Image 1 (cartoon, rainbow, N blue to C red):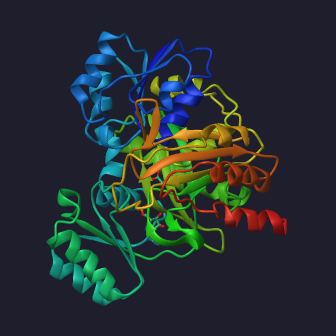
Image 2: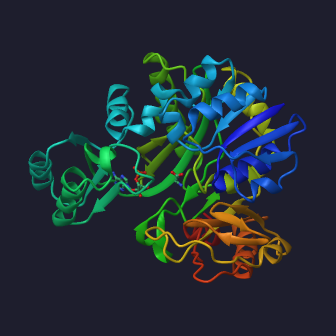
Length: 430
Ligand code: AMP
Ligand code: GLY
């Protein structure tokens, strides 16, 4: 099989790493890929950007691609999957109709409301005065979200009214996120513990993946600015058997049924961001129409099944009888980011220590890296994800501690407390 994988982050390196281990793969093209994907067996990077829809479709057609796997959301929201399917090419990722679940938070909230899916109460606004009046009526804490895609940065959890008002001004009047912020969703604050619940969805059926949890805050103790994710682990012990049954019955099933009822032939990953309260009740924080980054890195290290089988079944709309086998060993991934992440754009610092990290028992997934001659240099905010499995989470974490400490460049930063909630549970034996 010739597979075309689209994207260039850590998630895509983990996908390439896993796809390249399938006996069904003859050739993997990654557009545009990164220096890590280029190292995987039978894998070649193709210099086409994720926004070049015409070129991606032309490449898939000309090179007789059997299956396209779309990593990031933006090309899906822009309709890449529709165009590929119209050209007769199988694709993992929803069409533009399904991708609106991530592309518009107001649409996603209406979808949940329509299909009785538990989520925070909300209202949508395009007008600053009306939004401020709503905030004044509801008080803080309250959450302000840009409606459209904002690279994970369009959400402000405001602990006082002034912060909420400032966020509204910023988005609606200040044009902070451009078109994406011309409508805001304001919703009530949900307390609890977050978990990432990811499933493959096709033909009105869902195949849940193992559970995972990421850390969105930049700094230790979950402090500092929100990021795309500084680390993740799988499984997430907060999703115990009872919570899992509740999430499948009350959130996943109505989400999939809702798509069918709305006439959406959804074929791809559905990522449901959950907030789980102290009583074990889950509510949806957001939908994404793709795998999580960095959740994918530890998740795929635990997947024992052939990923090509799962993805081909999804693209074909035939998940009936398809199962996924997971290693019982937990996995953890620690992101090493540029010192000025998430705000800055520093690049070009030489990276060392990858072999030592591998020697310490880690798999190192590239994200924001580039080659300058023979030198590997930084090329973005999240640079690497050092990932490992172990007999328990503490054992896996000991490996990523050693691996992350072995990697160097000027200004590298990472959190030393990834997995702290699960580790505390592991230590207390609950
Ligand atoms: P989102 O992009 O919608 O996932 O939001 C980013 C982050 O903001 C989430 O991962 C949560 O940590 C936080 N967040 C979003 N919505 C809420 C909410 N209603 N209550 C509490 N925290 C929230
Ligand atoms: N790690 C969060 C996300 O991928 O949206």
